[in-house]
Length: 388
Image (cartoon, rainbow, N blue to C red; front, side, top):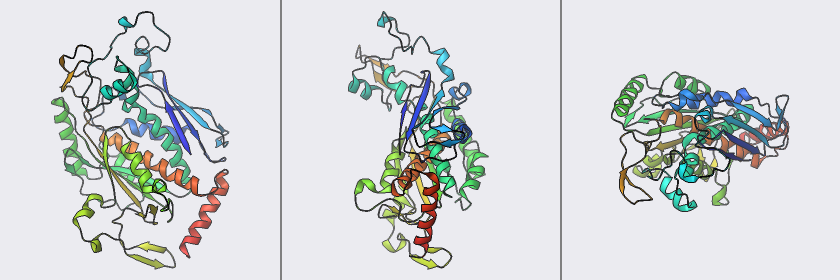
């Protein structure tokens, strides 16, 4: 499978086209809209989320509630577009010197300056409109389709926040992913630790008051993935590598780890590897899950555990110093509407990015033109792996 997104933060809409979905997968707009609504929530979000009420309009590839096998396309309208029509109009303008809200002062930590250099844009709005995290709405929509496919295959995925600004959750989730997501959604910061949630919100309030921003760590868990998904034969076919790439491609994400991750560097090998066991009911399984469900670039049947590190959002209401690209004079960087903390929302984005990679790996590995045959193949493969 593959997907493309298009659209700017303050343009008319975001567009998503997905190719490679099996025919016969049950799919409705509601399957996608629920994920979009979760992305918009979270303590520390800015005023933009009070304007947008993201919902998809499916424009192709689905008929009577089932995918057709042809590309699935949908759009997400930007409600804020009505306030930006003159600034972001698509039609040519007569005098470019009269463009409102031009940006020549790049913001540290953003794509502004590098993107301007790359594409030759003297108005850096041409960069920030696309590099904006608004694009993650489209990415979540694509991931929601992947989550739907996975759930129909008895593979479930969830996310939660494990750290914000140095405040860590002490809860290690053991429930089914659907239960974990339900519990996480009851917290404004999507944290399973009630005491830590209160401290996180207090820190977010203080940070916002000071015109600053904070980051954190999110965790994604996927269960039901059979062993052997992915491959060891080439580096670019390793599923954990694909997931890692997808996670760090999310706006403001700067690191990723599986299982105990970087902690493995501080332990002996005997404390890291997951011993193998077998039973008639389970088949092969591991006595621990330090490696986060992966060995040799392939799943091993244990829950997949992925964590992503999100840096503080670089748009600050007390901006850092920058240089005007026209005059080369020193200025405070431009201020764009932003969040003081987007970690709770980022957990949703990360969850859907991981879901896409898992679903894509399964579609690549099995016959997937027809969903009913994909489902039967995966059932037979699970039985085969259990009795291997």
